[in-house]
Length: 78
Image (cartoon, rainbow, N blue to C red; front, side, top):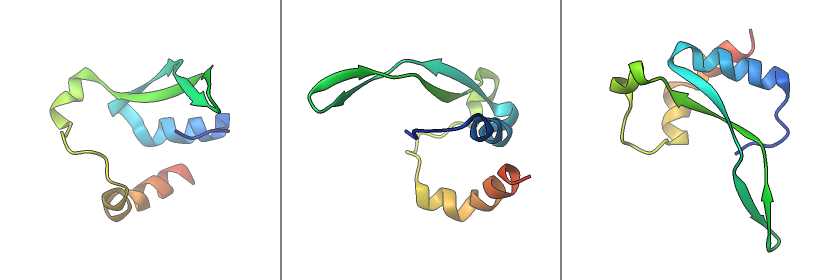
């Protein structure tokens, strides 16, 4: 989870996720200092028509860095 994400950040993420994903607003709760706090968050979900592309492997930041980071940065910095 990332905090303090700007509207410009969201625009860049939308562009990177492209046609494969849609963004959904959710309201998760967090435990902070023994208190429950509800927050607003966005998450990206794979569109059903692309479900065949999904993997059961957990997301791995090292694999992302090796395979996708250049594309992510190129897309987000345009």
